[in-house]
Length: 64
Image 1 (cartoon, rainbow, N blue to C red):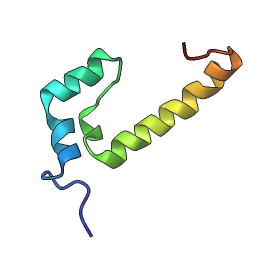
Image 2: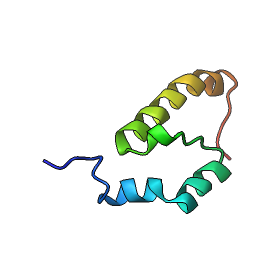
Image 3: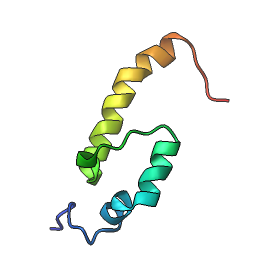
């Protein structure tokens, strides 16, 4: 079994790259340092969806 936090994994390397992190920030994504693992980033995204989905649905907001 592979350790998903292994710094050799491409996604871990990408999330540690300042250019990649800046692209996330430019798109409005907050990237705290403790979210540099795939699991932590996935958990953050799940929490954001759970937080914002009722508001989006309640306001009947649709993608254009």
